[in-house]
Picture (cartoon, helix red, strand yellow):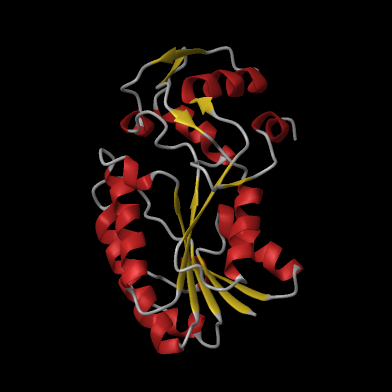
Length: 244
């Protein structure tokens, strides 16, 4: 199959292209660095020419109030381009629990992206993932200083990027789900606990202070970010990943 990976040079996209290529598919990475800009539509028709599947992994530069407009425009362009090119399957990567965190503008924007895909003219699949192991250090940096890291006790079930890429690859080469697949890691942590595990593994002696108002994930309550029954559970544990 020929698969156009929009955002195919990023964390998940580069891994996805490698997985699909290893399976014998023609996986082509596209991004602004290769001349394809989903926001403006530049290069999109050329990227989709002859493609059986398009996978959209793009995201805005920030998680703020600009997010809804970004997803509205990029999905409008993607769906129009895919329909014109005769692409038979459109796949997006979204977030487990996105509809359960209305206090986050970025999560509301991801729900908008999903709704646009569902209402569009192209057979589709949505893969909802929990947070990536690879982003934990970034999350810690949002609310830290030289002495402390402030984190909420928000429950989450993080997953390795390699496992995400495998799941997206499986969905991409299959029959369109016309629905959603949820994927998650094998363990549930409170974010403040995850912070302590991470700092210990890094040899970082800063203290983690539990602060339920700190950072983006403070907007999630209860088990909103934890996978529900029916999710595909990956094998890689967080400590295994840290030890690599």
